[in-house]
Amino acid sequence: MTQINTVSFTSDKFMFAFGTESGFYIYNIKPFEQVTNQKLDFGVLLIEIIDHSNLLIFVGDGKNVNYPNNKVILWDDSQRKSIGEIKLNNPILNIKVNSDYLFVITIDHVFVFYTKTLTNKEKFETYNNNENGVFTLCKNRRKTIFAFPNQELGYVNVIQFENEIEERKELKILTHVSQIACLTLSENGNFLSTASDNGTLIRIFKLDSEEMTHEFRRGTEKAKIYSLDFSPTNDFFCCTSDRGTLHIFNLIKDWKEDTSGRKKDDGIFSGLKRLIRLPKKVLITPRSFACFKSGDFKSFCVFGPNEEIFVVSADGNGKFYEVKFDKINGGETQDVQIFNLREDDNDNDNKNNLDFNSNESI
Image 1 (tube, rainbow, N blue to C red):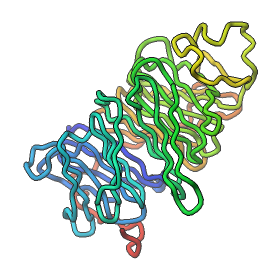
Image 2 (cartoon, one colour; image 1 turned 180 degrees about the vertical axis):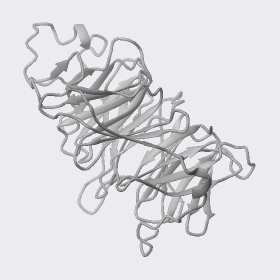
Image 3 (cartoon, rainbow, N blue to C red; image 1 turned 45 degrees about the horizontal axis):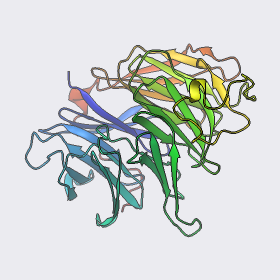
Image 4 (tube, helix red, strand yellow; image 1 turned 90 degrees about the horizontal axis):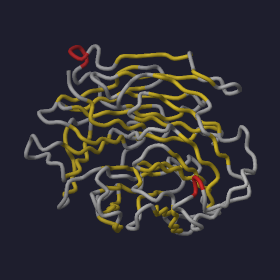
């Protein structure tokens, strides 16, 4: 049994990749099948597929001196070899990529490189103990928006790079009073969700007004949040944690004014004081709208194009779940398809090269 270290999905949710102690695997989602795997003499700590190409980026675990944990490898799967690299002074804790930029996160910096040339564009200072490499990149291919913890505890920086249509924008939003554990941006780039290292509360902010619009309680006990995601319509939201439950929240149901009568700096808003701009309406709910109990200690979730939810469990050899839920009534979902990962490992070694679009490479 080899451990799954990391899981990543392509921005269109058609494929996902994961790294193990002895290489990496790529799977197609519909139809569900293994596309390729590469056995290596070292582990892969982080991996991302560059959309619509045979190119991957990954970070090794250092078991092979050529693949230390402070080097990003650009890998051409059609040639089965490295074609470029970026080496930093510190261990790399996270990587994200789109067709224009490659983001490399260390414990105290976010480095931005041009994807085509691997040359440095700029860098940003982040919280000086960002040991989990907290960072998120918007899945919208038409614009580059990303977010990461600010140097000040509890604050998040949101940056949108300039393009042909949009100007460069930078925001700084207070989201929690403790360290940020997980972030994600909606597909249209309009909303930001955050969770702290307590893992009990999830907050959602509307970026154009910098207001908090929702606060959800995942649970009452501390948990490690592994993933957060918005549905394509922004009507629903999901998260996974080490508690073994996929929580699904309804962003539009019971939308109402906060009529509790408390002062805005009391109760759940204590510690945030008056620094968060609070709207007249905010959805506050004590529990999720729907859920799926997989029992997996470590799993990652994303919404599919039809608001189904894809979950990859990193426990053991791993499982893939396609979860459909009742969008009207919610509740514990029963409509689940389950696929085992790496079942035919011995037969599929180096099975296929990636071939999303052989004429479109970077």
